[in-house]
Image 1 (cartoon, rainbow, N blue to C red):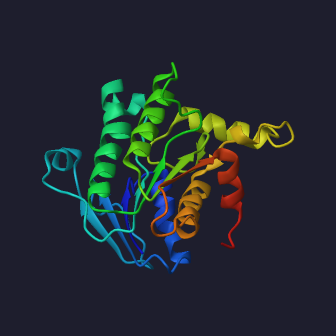
Image 2 (cartoon, rainbow, N blue to C red):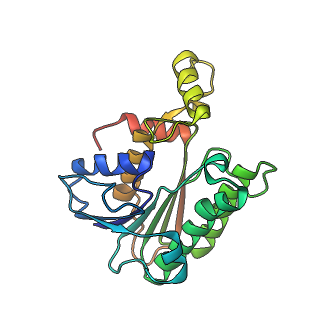
Length: 230
């Protein structure tokens, strides 16, 4: 399999790269990154391509041919982006452009990280944008569209996100499972990455079948992430 990874330098993208060594079915990974030296895995053939949003948007670069899947692990916060407009550019415009190109190039699978609570009709801007990108991706009718909706993410980032650090502390203190709140439990980025790979290897629509969409909610991501045997 040959996949393109968008967002390979983020929390989940890095975990995808680290996890690939366990899955020999994946023969090559192309990573688009702003810094060509920022992603690596010595055990998997990885081609890191330095790509800016401006070059992609203008058409100077386009998706490579022969892909089996696109993993979209792009994501930011409004605080980091600096404005709602810039946030939407990263979390909506960029993924949608990549998806449209993937569809044009007959890429069978598109896999994207959104968020728990994604809803195109939400009054919360963050959740609404996440829901809007899900809606637009469904319209493209990929052979398979995988949507992953994690709760607060746990893991090491280059920048500190206060909300996620608080979520990590609460995740260690509150018995979410015993309280019937498992779907809200903060989740390690590693578990989300493994769930994406699990979906790539197991959710294979039959030739000629109708387009398939599968949504992985947070509690399912936990179950898959804890299972290292697949």
